[in-house]
Picture 1 (cartoon, one colour):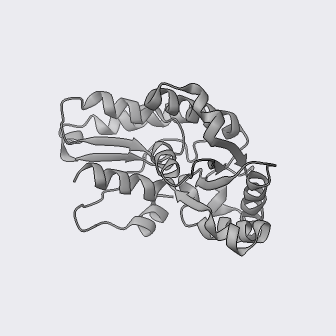
Picture 2: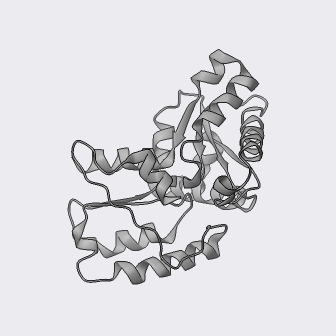
Picture 3: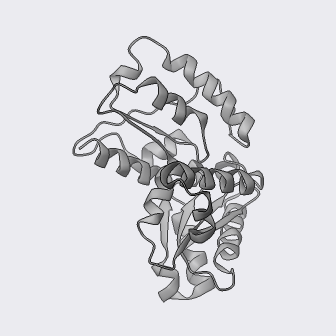
Length: 232
C-alpha cells in the first residue's frame, strides 16, 4: 500500500521532500477502530525515537478514518509554529467542501461495511470540531457506500471483482433520489489511483456530462496539497 502511495505522490515537489513510513508491526489492514488503536500504539513506539518528530515540518496520516495518530501527533507538537498534521479523511472533507455549490453534497466510497457507521461518525465529529455544528453533516453529507472489501483486498483480490464492487458502491451513492452529489471521496488509502474506476461508474450511471462534473477526491492527494499550502 505504501508503494502505491509513493507511485502516486513521488518523493519530491517544488518545495518539499516526502518521506514514507510503514507501521512495521501493525495490522496489515485497518478494518475497524481497534485496528486503528493498535496501529497508533505501534507507531508511537517508532516515533518516540530521539529526534524523529523534530526532523519533519508536517505529517500526513494515510488511513481513511478518525485515526488516533492524528490527535497524538497534534498533541506532541503544540509549540512547533510551522508544523502541521492532518489525516486523509480530514483533508478529503476539506477538499470536497471547497468544490460544492450551494445545494451540493459529498459522499464517501469505502471498503468494509463497518466503515459506514465509523466514517459517518467521523464526518459528524469533523463538523463539530471545525464549525461547532454536528448537524451540518445532514446538510452536506450523502453518506458512505462500501465495497465489502478490506484495504488489502483492493490489491490482492481479482481486479475485475474490485472493479465491479467499486462501481456498484459508486452507483448506490449517486442514485439517492433528490440529492445532488457533487463530490465523492475515495475512502481508503488503498484506493489510490482508482478514481478512474469511479469515473467510469459515474459516466455509466449518470451520462457523460453529469458523470464528468462530479469531483473525485483522493484523500492522499488532498492531504499532500493541504500540507503544502499550510507550510508555505
